Image (cartoon, rainbow, N blue to C red):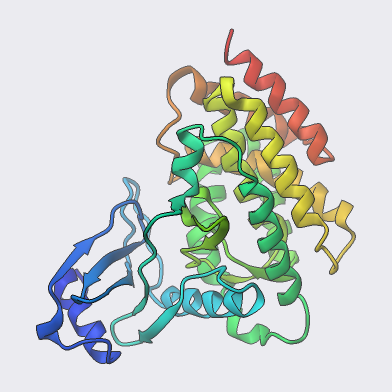
Length: 339
């Protein structure tokens, strides 16, 4: 709840304030599960449904994790920008209310629509999703690196630090003090490279596919920053799933290679080899964060979790210099998980 209002009350007020419907036209408000940083719901208006989203001050995780609710506005701006750069790469927006710290958007559902994470974990046939996501993300990053975007609208480094750097790097550092120097180098690099507009949470759980094209959701961490973070964040999820599902590992690692290849062709703002090197340095930090940070992935447990921990700690000290080299190392780690 926010300001004493229930999700149902906030949702009703939001659709009213945006002129989408009157309170009497709201038939039902159905909370959506899965997110930890916001309340999200589907509002049934009879002839149509809309999706509403409200940022939470305290995130829904075991560890104490707080973040400013103004990130709701940054997300809305990111979604607007992405839609202008790549048509249909973000949900259609229906308006935002700053007092409620919430916005409304189209509810995406129906035949031919699916969540990328679900498809990966169900080991559905490879459909070129990773390449499509890499291409879309590359186009958005490239467009944001030009002077056509007002960078002052996305100077959200402090929020990014609270939402990403602290819970993923600094918290993990407290669990692995002998890797402090390596993790601190990652933090320093992220603060030095404000090159593109980051999404900040490019995860398969935040990517829907509709008619074969990706729709990126949940851009609450949007800020000008280092593109290596977005690239490594997405690749990390595919790599972790490869280790989690060794029988499906090769397909997933091929998808990482395709994701990087499609993305890299849009890298016009810097030498792509420099970016690739930072991606490889950032990946093991994120891998370790997803087992020992504030937001561990739910599907890793037992020996597999320990394998990821061991691999990530090793790579923090001796990172790969190219994506192909890194994938070779992951293949070796994945084979160890089957022994």
